[in-house]
Length: 276
Length: 291
Image 1 (cartoon, chains in turn purple, blue):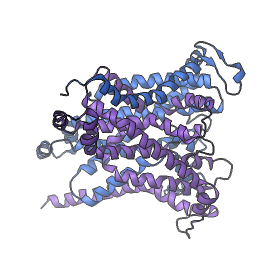
Image 2 (cartoon, helix red, strand yellow):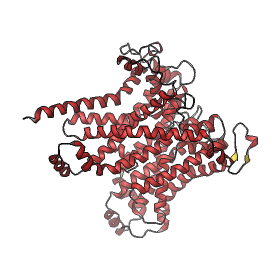
Image 3 (cartoon, one colour):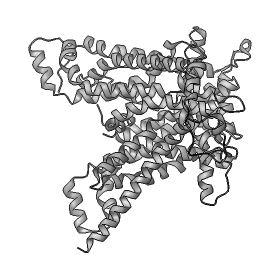
Image 4 (tube, helix red, strand yellow):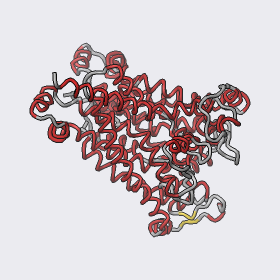
């Protein structure tokens, strides 16, 4: 066949392009991990070294001497609590938006989505002043609450979609049996909506775990999260690159695992359902 | 369609979320508005006084504010077309048939940049683009290009933050467009491919209509996200050198927390909020399906 050589050439080009894409996406991670395994002297080698004897000393130092362990635990506490809270508060609201007709529904909807777009600095300024007056600076609960401003809309969005995909006949049948609205929600729709709950939970976790600005402004030592910690290594003249990259690796790995688990739904979550 | 539900029930379902979001999302905004009407400097708290809209008039006539705004939109105007062009290319490659495993691997690797902590992207930028021991200068050195001072030069620093924005968000654009490509009915696409060999014709006349919703979503989400962009630039350049990479969010943060002028910063934030809401309204009207 005459077309074969052209086809295999285009196949070869496709393979090459895909390898380039993979390399482009993965290389920074490769560099992050290898730098984290270098001693400070090696990290400051010019030009950079590619082959060397790896050491885990950066990890041990940042985790046990510099207090990164504590900030990772803080990040975990904050991300898990805010996610749990967002799901508990958001699920009934999502159910209401999917199932009930009421006045002002469109405005409510608009308000929920607008929260996705508001720049965090707009909230960080007044939140800082309020929290300072209440003596709540540097407390976990402060971050847990402010992270709801982006987690709650995400949960409501994804779960409304999920509830809408559950046949309404199920509700009607249960209603004829005399079940209350709350019971229909709890015992019939909620179990069927679990995939959406899981996806929105993963998103909420990732966004909270990754957040830097609020953490920077609202915490000092006690509730400091891991990204804020990584940034504080940047102060001073001689930057400890190995330590910074070790901390970065520790921050990024859990998110990447979650993101890969939810990779099929990533686009839906990041566009808040605009694109499936 | 749902039957009429008692108001009390509806209220019971909605109230927890609505009240919480109002307390954490709206009360602070009202407080920001209150602050913006005052002379309010954290280092001169004895001097707090009501000054009507003075902060607003000084912000609106402040070249620094508009320069930061201009920089933010310049970044968007350069980065977004790159992201769409490269993203579309990636989507078309991934949409082609065959090579299942390699395609899956490519798709999974696309997930990595999007999920990376934004602050870490900035830190990685510091390490990789360092003048002396950065790997980027080593790699371009293999091509015979002299080392570039990425972080210390205003123009290069701006190019660098665009590079990282493109690195992080092109995969997002690619996956959105790929989702659009899969909505083209298979038999329509096959028929078109029998008619013409040109992939460009197929793209323009057959696939493009199906890509439109995704493109609109990308356009508006990237606009909002560029207005929000803080973490990556802050950890990479802190807005510098000079103010060459000081985007709008960084500038407000500097005024509020490093110059301690909460009054002016709040006025800037409220103006940014108004711009955002206008954009959001456009966004929802443009393509969100109604409840």
